[in-house]
Length: 535
Image (cartoon, rainbow, N blue to C red; front, top):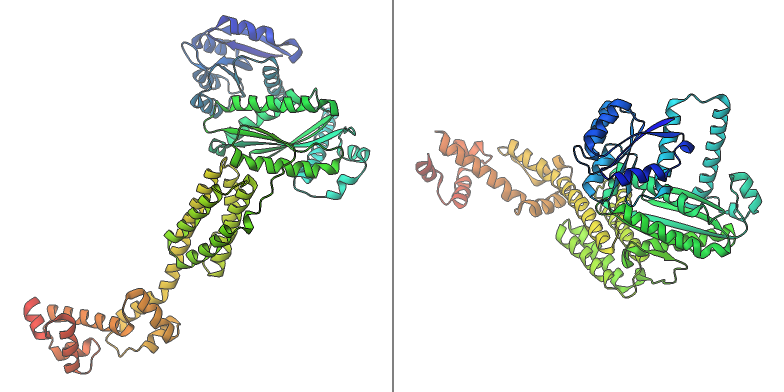
């Protein structure tokens, strides 16, 4: 029997928790109660409870201190937080400490019971060695769950579609369902918020989803199966026609409860989409399609809502003049290797789409993905190197955006950061032949150099080298060579006593008269005058 300690600074709350749960039925017993953190910690030391149910704010030690210190005494102890507060900092700390459940006041019997059952199962798995018969039962149960999940996964990812046309009895036998020939529907629950980027927060909220749905739906449906994909949940429902309103009401209650639970985290929002109700399994494809369109509509209509039914709006923004102009402008901007025109093209797309009459969330999401595809295609066409996982990373981040504004800002940020890096690398690649030529000139300026000679070193044609060299340096190759030679002549005039004739030969000239004329034009002084002035 598992030992339970209850700690709350309100005696009535302790008494409520004692009476709220059928403890013997759960194979648990309350071994002590405490009305402050100091007494609670003493009880932990004395009794080593398996479970501690504690308020988060108490005199002495608060709930977080009690968890931290209690875990040091007995790492096996599991904690359930009871709180009247929805403070982000408390919740985050509790989740980091590995709290098993975070329950808001007023305490609900079903929610507390589910949390306790979950802990009980955890202890059973840890503490006892399963018999052979139990292992067989557990394996069969796992196999059944796997088959049920396979059926739903195939539906969500549109695999094995012909299966949905099979007789209902055959599907039930093969995948361990108990479907009735009544109503079917697909539901999507979407959580949004950067707080979900932390795996412990996502896991915490996911546990809430599963326990709440089980609690709210079991009385009103023949069957339900839930599948989690990142921050989205796909729910398959089978229910009687007369239960339609009850199912809708329970989903609304579920959304309200999840919003309340989400209040303990910062930057969290939730949306539910109930697809069209159908009367056979094949109709679930249409139900799922509508649920997806409604979930995407949150980008325009806002989060925190229950959307339902058939999605009727079908605009064609991709065929609009605005999108055509964006494609042209973006392509030219990307070719420039300059950031400003790229940012300007993306900003124009954002402003145009957000003000476009009747624009849907689906179109906005698709157009941001099209902008990414255009970006990748153009970069490949211009032979500009790109990170391999750009599109995958964009899709993952876009899925966590809860509004059109946030989605476009994310799109612009991702493309600009990627483009700055790619453009820098491209420029470096283009400058590499110039760097090779400059290095070669620095080492051989005293030799008789020609454009043809150095172009072969850079592995470019003389005409192309001439063009890119002028673009990069602002001068022709011969002007650059002359500059390097004149700078070397200046150093020799200042730092040595060599004659002008000697220096002439050392910097690559054969004719002293030509050297003197070139030096005078370059420096404004004849060689001897320059030496007198600067040596």
